[in-house]
Picture (cartoon, rainbow, N blue to C red):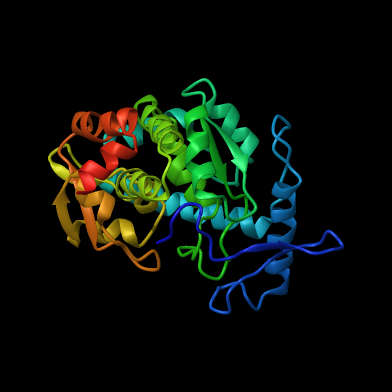
Length: 292
């Protein structure tokens, strides 16, 4: 329901150094002054971060931990039915806390011996080329705030549940981590905005909203589906198309609703052979030939 690096809540820094997250009037936390102050404070943590330092500690409230615990419990039930085995195995290895929100530094330490990935804190919008480019170095930009407690199963923009339950568990898989790194290398290699957009759309329809034939059924591996309590129940009823680079790279989508067009890999091997090889070798000329 959202695209990485394209947030609906821009972050502004005032002349006095104050940090304000601009929530839309439709946001569940818009009228909640306590929540808005929390969002501002957490965004300020990320803005004060310097590469190489430990990620700033976010002091989550009991209410925020309760949202994490509730969503974690309910998503785990759905994952057993709808997630591919590779994701389930990776989640078991990562073994995220179930009763509290883990710190990003903590998740980085859990990922380090598994795949070497670690997190970078993001206050808000991260430029597209930077967001994807750092994947090549085993880095992943992540927000630290959590969705509003009034709607624990919905968020209008990426929160720590999406970033950690969706992407973090995926990044605990060496096979998936390798694909993330290849996507980052591709984003750095291409030069034009058009080619970068093509690369990012392939990422969107795979790492964010990818589905795959697994154990005799259509199951999900995309972080956007696996972190969405509602969408994970709906994806099998969408327009499911074969995995196809050109089709994914030019397919329009609406980030404000469930994705009604999805692309299914027949196996993990096919995903690696088609998408992985594309990211490993693509340049502007290749992208434009595919688009032609």
